[in-house]
Amino acid sequence: MSTNTDRPILELKNIVKKFGGFTAVDDLSLDIVEGELFTIVGPSGSGKTTMIRMLAGMDKPTGGDILLRGERINDVAANHRPTCMVFQSLALFPHRTVGENVEFSLKIRGVDKPTRRKRAEELLEQLHLPLSYYDKGVNQCSGGERQRVALARALAFDPEILFFDEPLSALDFRLRKTLEKELKDIHRITGKTFVYITHSLEEAMVMSDRIGIMREGRLVQVGSPDEIYNQPKDKFVAQFMGEVNVLEVEKAGEGRVRVTNNGIELAAHGMGPDFEAGFLVVRPEVVRIGDNAADMANKLTGKLFNEYSLGSRIQYQVRMAEGATWVVERLRDERYSGQLDDDVTIGWQPEDAMLVLE
Ligand code: ATP
Image (cartoon, rainbow, N blue to C red; front, side, top):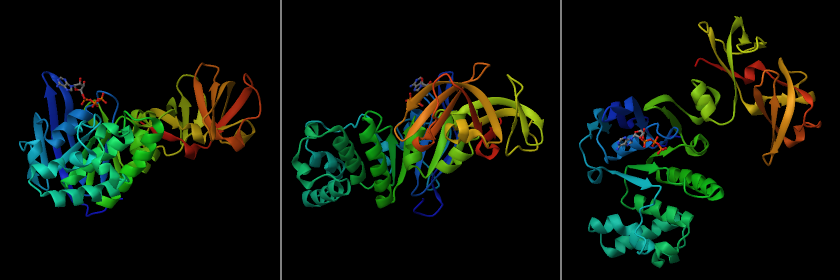
């Protein structure tokens, strides 16, 4: 949810970044709304870091303009922008105390000691760090605590926009999950604009107001987590979300498609008037298996060759005669009661699958 008006605080207009003959960011345009948590997601090498470095003023675009509240800032250095970067490497002063780290930017600006301390204590509280940590050495803090100190330090000088370069990627799974939610809380409490980059769409889904999916220097889709999940623009976005079943299909009639490699006809929902060929995307969680598949409009039969526990859910892999493997996920109370190597029916309703063009 955006906390402010819908005026863009940051506008990127046709941004290009070349390294020699290689184009890392390719004619990218985007508006970032004031107060939102916007995440740029993409695979390794898609241009995320290059992008955020330009936004934070650590690098200049080869072409295009970056506007902050309508003012062109291409040539404004990082330390003259009302923005701050929080890095994965944390970049804290390891031999200083938490308090000294948090107060660093305020000290540089000549803020007096009592005011600095008051602000640092406010931030420790906001970030769920005990006040006693003020005098604790940063190198005595855990990874998660250091991450909170880094965020406190970034917030201390009250930047308008905070940029995050994969800050959580070095942490273990559970801590990352906790900090993702905390970051979202901090975002809501501060009302600041956060721009975050990650290669994990799952991480982006948890915390973002909007997500931009980057591929080869371009934004392929921008939307809310729901839009990205429910209406992926193409096969790349659909597959980026995790394990999905993707079938190459062509139109076989109104509301019907034919699977290219085996000729099987299936019912398909949401076929636009121009649809001739594309991909049918079926998420594992909409596919039923065994008796639960009996009433489904689309049914296929294959051999059950693996079953994995995912905690609350079970994942099945079903191999089709032509060699394709389907992934099915069910909650435990709908688990398949048969054996591995059984011939099983899987099925889904057409409205639970998506047709995408490429
Ligand atoms: P990762 O998730 O692995 O960090 P990324 O999406 O952040 O990847 P970038 O670091 O922005 O990707 O890199 C995008 C492309 O630009 C890559 O192919 C990279 O090799 C190239 N690149 C980045 N910086 C430079 C540079 N200084 N000189 C030459 N090529 C560069």
